[in-house]
Length: 626
Image (cartoon, rainbow, N blue to C red; front, side):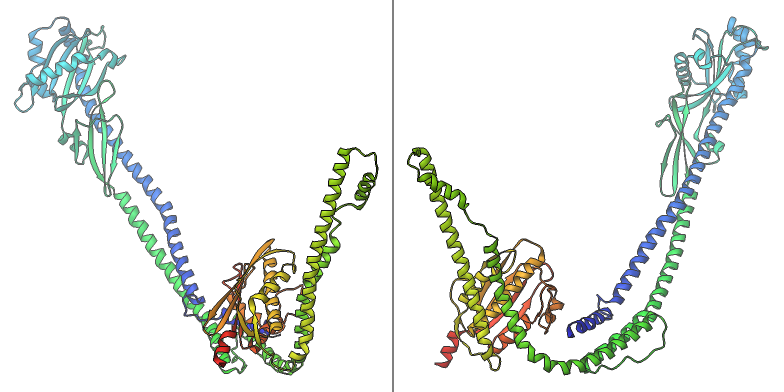
C-alpha cells in the first residue's frame, strides 16, 4: 500500500517543486513568455513588412515612372521645337527653288549666322535626295561665327544618315545627334513648295545644342548629359536615400547616343521605412506590456498558490505531521487542488494508522512468502527442462531402424546395400547415444535445481528464528552454479560472463545462493521485458577494503533513479504475471543479516541495471582473528 502513496507524494512534490530553480515551472513560464514575445515580434515585423514595404515600393515605382516619362516628354518637346523650326524651311518655295538652283543670295539672307541666331539653332544644312550635301553651316553661339570643326563633324554625320528611311512617309522628324563632346537635337524636313506640293528635292536640317544646364532647367532638377553611358533601356541605381536614373537619348537609328542622368531623393521609401519601424516599435511595446501583465497574473493566480502548497509540503516532510493545508476560499482549479491535497493528506493519515496495525501481521507471513518466491525461482529450470524433454521427439524413427535391421538379417543382400544399411544403423545408434547423453545432462541440471529447492526448504526452519550462520564460501562457485540454472529459466538466450578465480567470503552459502539466483532471475526478466530475443549478464568481483563487491550487470530494460527506493518495498513487483514480489526486499534483509549489503543502480530506462552486493572477505576475517 505504501508504494502508490509514495508515488502520489513524489508526483505532487514534482509538480509544485522549487519554482526559483532554473528548471522550475516559473522559470519555464518566463522562458515560454519570452519565446512567445520574440516569435510574436518577429512575426509582427514580417507581417508589417509584407504589408507596408510592397505598398511603398509600388508608390516609389510609380514615382520613378513619372520621372522617366517627364524626362522623355521634355526631351521630345525640345526636339519637336527644332522640328517645328525646320518645317518652316522645308515647306517653303524659296528652299524648293534653292535646291534646284543654289544661289548665294538665298544663302546670305536665309542661311547666315544672323538668321541661325534668330532661329536659335546652332547648325543648318541642305542635303539632296542622293545624300549630297548642298550646304552645311555650324555657328559658334558665343561669337556668332562659323565653327569649321563642328561643321565637319556635322557633315560627316549627315553623310552617314539615311533620311529617306528615317522619315518614310512623314514630312518632318527629329532625333538627337552626338557631335564629339556635344549633343544636339536635330530636326529634318523634306524640301517642298509652301503649299506642300512638288516632288521633294532634298532635306533641310537644323541642329540645336543640348547642355546639362538646359536639361536641368527643363526638368526642374539637377541633371547631366552622360555621353559615355548610352544604355538602350532605362537604368535605375538605388542607394539608401537617393536614386540615380539614366534615361536613354535616342538617335536616328533608334539606338541611344547619350543618356539624361539625374538623382532624386527616395522620400517615399524613407517614409515607408520610418512608418514600418514606428509600427514595429509600437506593436512590440504593446506586446511586451501584454506579456508582462500576463506573467504578473500567472504569478499571482498560479505560481504563488502552488508555492504555498509546496511550502506546506516541506513542513509536512520535515515534521512528519500530516497537518492539513489552511483553507483558502477559491472556486477555481487552484482551490480544487488544495481540496484534493487536503483529502490526500487525510487519506495518508488514515492509511498510516492502518499500516501500523497490519505491519505485525504481515511480518508473520513474510518469511513463508519469501521461501515460496525463492522456491518458485528454483523450480522454473526444472519445469523448463521437463517441458523440453516432453516436446523433444526421438532422434531416429524406430520403424525405419527396424526395417534396416530386418534387411541386414537377409543373406542375399548386395554388398553395396549392406554397407549403406550398416552406415545408417551406426549413425542412428550414435544419434541415440548423443540424445541419451543430452537428456542425462539436462536431468543432472534438474537434479541440481531440485537439490537447491530442498536446501532452501530445509534451511528455512532454522533461519526463520535466528541470524544465519556465516562461513567461508566461494562466491565464484555459487555464481557459476546459478548461472547454469538461470540459462533454463526463460525463453530468451542469455550469455553469462563471470570471473574464474575463486573469491572466499563470509556468508551463508544457501542464502547467498538464493540471493544470487533471485538477482539472476530478475535480470532475465528485465532482458525479456526489453523485447529482445537475447541478452547478457556480466558478473565482476572486486576487492574493496576488507570486503568483496560483486556487481551483476544486465542489458535489460533498466529503471529510472526515482524508482530505486520503490524496488525494495515490501510487496512491490513490476511483473504483472508473477505474484508475491518480496524477492528484493527479502534479498536486502538477508544481505544485511550476513553483514553485507545490496544496492540497485541504473542510468535510466533501456540502459540496463547493476546489482551491487558487498560481503566481508573470509581471508581478512581470519587474519583479524589470528
